[in-house]
Image 1 (tube, one colour):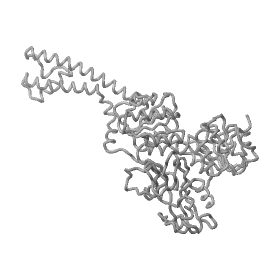
Image 2: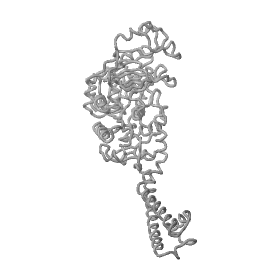
Image 3: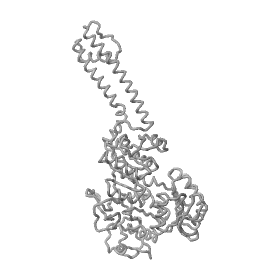
Image 4: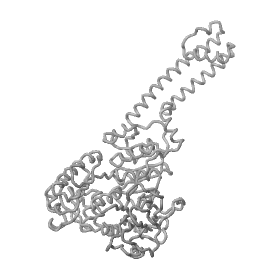
Length: 566
C-alpha cells in the first residue's frame, strides 16, 4: 500500500468528509462537496487517471486503499472526519468499511451505498448514525418519468408547492405558469436568472400545491399511464398470442369449408340450412354418419363428401398441431421472457444492470408494458425480470435486428441503461432511425457529454445517474436540512428552505439585498414553517426573524445560507 497519491498527511485533515470509492458517483460526490466549500478526501482502490486528474485539479486529496482498509482510513483522518460516504460498486465491501468506520466514534456520520435496500433496512441498527442509499433507486424514478413523457424536467417540492425545472419550449403547457427564468445556456455555460429564458434555456414552472412531502426531489406519481385502448390491448394479449398468423389461417380455412359444405349439401341433398350445417360439421370432423348419410346419393355427391372428409381430417390435424405449438410457444415465452405477439406503447429498457432493473419495477408499478434487452442471458437481473413476467430479448441493443425483436417501431420510449456511453449513444441513434417518434432517454456517465448530446441531438432526456444521485448523498453527509441540488449548464443549483434567524445573513434584509449578487433568488417566504408561504415576493419585501424562506441559487451560496440558519 502506498502513501496518498495526492494530498497532505492525515494530521492536516480535520472536520472533513471522506469519500471511499472513485467511480462516477464518487467523483461527482467529491466534486459536489468541493463546490459547497467542504474539505474532501477520496480513498480509491484502483487507479483511474482521468478521475484522479479531475480531482487533483480541484485540490482534492486522493489516497490509496479500499473501504475496509483501516490503515487507509487512518491516513484519511477518520477520527476527525465529519462524515464518510462509501460509494464503491461492491455492496459487501461498502458494508465492511461501514462496520470498521463505526468503531471510530459515534460522531462520524456514515452514508452507505447499497443496491439491496432490503438488506439496508435490516442492518441500520448496527450503526449509530448511518444513512443507506441506493444510486439506482434515486435515479430510476426520474428516468422513468422522463420516459413516460410526464415531465421533461425535474420535479421539486418546496414551500408547499410542486415545481418543475424544464427546458423552454414553444409548446409549453399554458396551464403550467412559469414561475421564473432559471438559466439561459450557451456553449455549455449557464447564465443564471436572466430576465427572460431563451429557447433551450431553463425555467421553473408551478405544478400546484403539494403539501404531503418534505422538500426535495419528487418522484413521479404511481398511476396507470395507459388509455382504455391500451388496457384492452394488454388484457387481450394472451388471446392474440394464441391466435397467431398460422392459427388464423387454419381457422379461416375451416370456416370456409364449413360455409361451402353447408351451401353445397343444402342444394345437393335438399336440406334446410341448419341441417346442412350440422351434416357438414359431422362430415368435416369425421365423427361418422348416423341419422344423415350419402348412401343413396349420386356418385358426384359421394365424391364431394369424400373430399370433405379428407380436407376436414387434414384441417383438424393441422389445427391441433398449430394450437399445441402455439400454446407451448406462449408458455416458453413466459418462462424464457421472449417477445411474442405485437406490442404497442411499451417501453424498451436496454441494459439490465442496477439502473435498468430498477426501471423495470418503476414501469410495472405504473402499469406500463416493458421489454428488456440485455447481452448476457446469465445476468442475475435477466432471470429476475423473467420471473416478473417481463419479456427479455437477449442480444446487442446497438443492432437493428435486436431493437426490431423488441418491436421498437411500436414503442413509446427507449431507455438506454448500459455501462458503456458509446453503446448507449449508438442505441439511441439506431432507435431513432427505426422509429422517428420514439422518446429517447439516454443514461450517460459523462455529464459534459450528456449535456451536449441533449442539446445537439433529438434526445428527450440525457442524464448521468451519478449527477442525479450525488447531491442526495452530499445532503445526507452534510446533514444540514433539506437541500435539493440539480445541475444546469454545468452549474450546481440548490433549492432549500431556511429559517431567518437573529444575526443571520437574511435577518432584516430586503429580498433585493439577498438577490443582489445574482447568485440566488428568493422564491417564497412563510411567517412560520407551519403556515402557507407567500410567493412572488416584491424586491422591497423585508425578511423578518422567525420566517422560513425558500431559495434557489448556486449550491455553495445556498448551502452557506442554510448552514447559517441551521
